[in-house]
Structure formats: C-alpha cells, structure tokens
Amino acid sequence: MIRRAARAEQIEPFYVMEIAKQAAAVARASAGSRERMIYLNVGEPDFTAPPLVREAAEKAIRDGATGYTPSAGLDSLRERISGWYAERFHLNVPASRIVVTSGASAALHLACLALVNPGDEILMPDPTYPCNRQFVHLAGGRAVLIPAHAAARYQLSAAQVEQHWSEHTRGVLLASPSNPTGTSIQPDELCRIAATVAAHDGITLIDEIYLGLSYDPAYGQSALALSDQIVSINSFSKYFNMTGWRLGWLVLPEELVSTVEKIAQHLYICPSTIAQHAALACFAPESLAEYERRRAEFKARRDWFVPQLNALGLTVPVLPDGAFYAWANCQSACERLFGGKGAAQAAGSWELASELIQRAHVAITPGRDFGQAETAQYVRFSTANSMTRLEAAVERLTWLLG
Image (cartoon, rainbow, N blue to C red; front, side, top):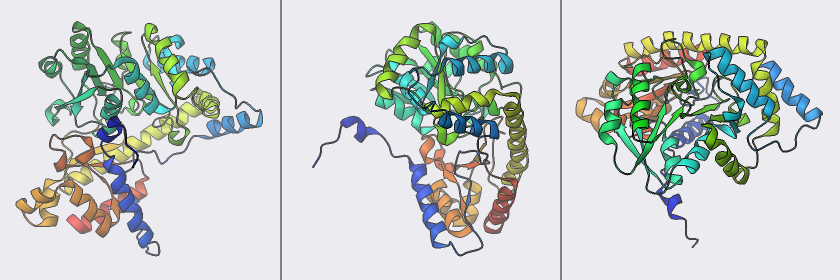
C-alpha cells in the first residue's frame, strides 16, 4: 500500500461536493421527469463571459498567442487591473504590486506558501469558506476558527482578534463579502482589525473575490485603501463571470512580489495565456457595462429571493450586501419537515439538504463545510441562477415546507 503524506491525510473532505454528487445522481435517475433538478448549491454565475471576452480568446488562439507569459502575468493585464482599481475604487494600486494567478485558489495558495511557516496560526471567522483553512494547513499552519455571529455580520471584530492572538499567531484571513454569508466587514471594524494585526507585526490577508458584486456603497470598498501592507486576493471568476478560465490575482506589498513570483514559477510557470488575453477585454467599456447590468440582476434576485426564504421559515438573519448567497437558519424548516424540535436538532442541515434533493429536486449546500459554530443549523442558498429557476425553487420549497 502506498503511504500518503501526513498533510494529505489532514485535509478535510469538501463536503459540498458530496451533496453535489447526490444531486447529480438523483437528476440522472429522474432524467425523464418534467421536474428537473434546480441547483442552488453552486457558487457559479449563470452568466458566461461576455462577447468581447470570448472574441479575445478566439483571437489569441488564431494569432498563436498561446506561449508562456511572465509568471506574474502579462504586463498589459496587470496594468488593466491597476486601472480598474483606480476607476472603480479610486485607489492607486501600482501594476508592480499585482501578480496574476491561476485562479483565486492559486492566489491563496501562493500567499500562504509565502507567508505561513509550520506551526503558525491564522485567525479566521467561523463560518468561512472551507478551502481557505485548507490552504493554511497545506502550508503547515493551523487555521483558528473564531465564532462569528449575526450581530457582527458573521465577521470578526478587532476585539476578537486581540483576544485570540497568541505567540503562534501569524495573522488573519478574512473575506469581504464572504462566502457563505454574502456579508461584508463594517469599514470601521476592518480598519481596527488591520491596525490590531499591524500592532502585532502580523499579516492581514483578505479575500475580495466578490468585491465587484457589492450592492451597498457602505461596504463596496477594497481593504487596500487602508494600507499597502494588506494582501488582497481577487478573481475573474465571480464578477467577471470567468469561472472555468481559472484566472485570479494578488495585490501584494512591493517587497513580497518577487517572493510570490518565484514560488509561482515553480508551482505552475504562468497563468493560462489564453485566459489572460481574454481577460484584457473584461475592462473594455462595453464589457464593464454588461457586468454592471448583471450585477443589478444579481441584486434583484437577492431582493426577491431572501424575503421568500424568510416567509418559509428559512430565516436569513443578515441581508447579504454582496455576492450571490443567502445564509439561512433552517431549524424551523427542519422542525416542520422532521416532526418536532428534538427530531429537527437530530437531523440538521445535512439531512434537510438531502430531503430537498430527493423530494423537491432542489439542491442546496448544508452548513457543515463552513465551520463548527452552529453551522449544522444553517444552509447556504446560491442565487446565481435565473429568476425563473428561483421562482420554481420557491414553489417546490413551499410545497414541501409551507
């Protein structure tokens, strides 16, 4: 038997994929049914890359622009990203601080490999996106999950960071807007967190991949405005609708760029060349106008769907101010479906998700993946689907739970 590396054994399963497999199996078994599966479990925009982006990819292939690029990405793309920060957020983010990566996952991996030593602890909120803590583990560190509740928008406070800071703490990994909650950190609180971390000579890493999909001007600002020492992770997947193109970026302090670039050279040589040439077209006025139209559509879906969930007893304690998720307490729904409070507590979100797949043909994500702080009482809905499908999902949920 082949002996596995200890780090591989310590990585937790990505449970959401198990639910996805279950939904796919039920969908296959009922392929002839009129009631096909509605997927509200996937954090992927239902929009594809807009026309200019697709045309740019085709042109790159026709022109033979498919060789390696610099490991930090095309200079022209780094300049376009820099320009986007200036235009959208009124920030001066030099292109020299931007490293283009093979998706936000690679960006997180690179940041952790560059900054986290074995034994280091990284503080993060609970709930949080599961892959974030796994990247810390892969770098030899330990993710310290701190319960974050509705009163704090499911985000950490500076007081919590100070309270949990130890001799082993290296920094914090935050997300704003967050997956699974769609909530952002209060700007004043984020400022206090960054100051607290800096006072300990630590690092602040912030996942901003949903920043473009902010719906409230009070929250839709980049943490990069606070300090040039903050590390921001971003992506072309969500706002720019390029999930399968696997393209993201890091904004780093100047002194870290060469270190991260060196690691990237060995890890994957360079990001996808075709994807990079395509992404240049994301910043054309026509494309940006289309992205803003789509952002408005995502907001309209949120504004309609969240009240529907609340009416069904799938209570969303904090209205998401960004992304395309709703983090819903499912205790009341479980009580109705499984018969009483005790049965509901014994069942929880995993069982509810399975029931919805089997009986209503609606796939959602149970809270299990996202942490330990009451996550068994929560489910995540994704509104990255058409309004027609969302309306059909509410009809089925009403039939089952109403």
